[in-house]
Length: 123
Image (cartoon, rainbow, N blue to C red; front, side):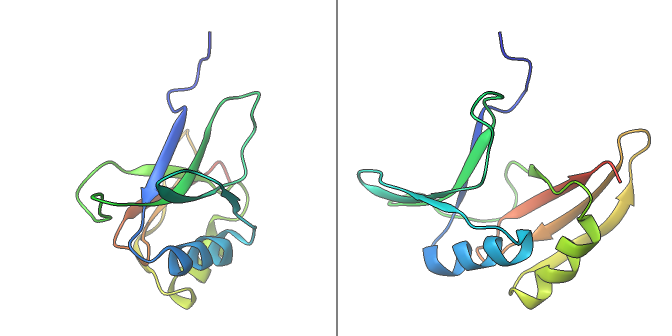
């Protein structure tokens, strides 16, 4: 039985190339394109054994935007670096670093697609 609350997430995009560039820039990592019938997907790095992963997705009839679920990405040890890269990549910092003792720190951003995404780090 898996113990993680999240198994998979998808951040919707209307401009796939722009969204992929945004996340690759702020996270300083490459996303991996997946060959999916009917829509485009590029996956964040993830651990198959832990069963938690996610992707940016462009899909007919689905639109990005604020006001829905907030997914938190693990940016362990680089919260300040990620937050600093957000404006340069075309996004907006909605909430700068904030302590959530004893659970570390969070920041909240708005990506280039209008999605609100959380960032989490223990340090």
